[in-house]
Length: 117
Image (cartoon, rainbow, N blue to C red; front, side, top):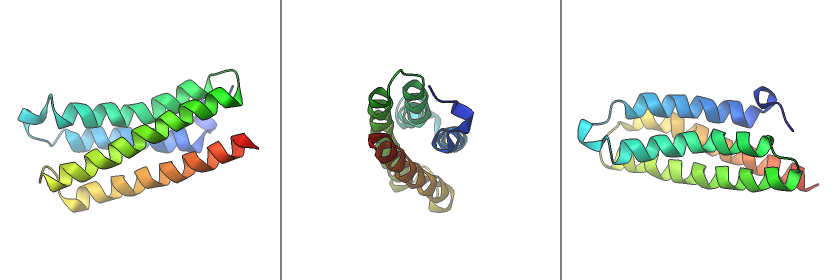
């Protein structure tokens, strides 16, 4: 079992979730049940899966949930890019979050590799 607050990848993923919620609050109201909902679920899924894995009993289970979190991070990356392409948000607002998502992906891969040893 791991202490969540000590996991840098979880902390960064939590920051991304907060920033994604703030960003998506600027989306048009007609997107409330579309991209806004989807992007928020993706953003929450990343730290949630890291947390669930951290609470499991074995490194193998943790690695599995880190893999799921990584899949969610790629989904979030896609939704962030799409929100810009649809002109729902400016590039200068979305680009810093995208950069952080990529950083979480790298951290996640490094942690998975570490757990395999």
